[in-house]
Amino acid sequence: MEAFKILFTTDTGLMSLAVIAFIIGMGWFFTRLFLRKMREDAEAARKR
Image (cartoon, rainbow, N blue to C red; front, top):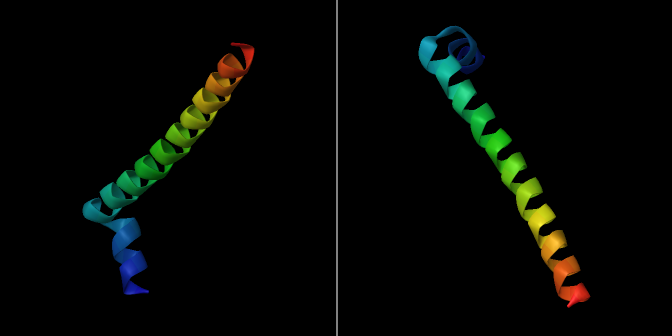
């Protein structure tokens, strides 16, 4: 329980949360980007 208190109340904990949220968001963004590019490439290959 003390870890959550430190995580949500200290500057270091809040910065850690921000970094974790950023990394998760970046993973979501790149996953969608790569899936879209793979779909587009598959369509282009099928048309050729």
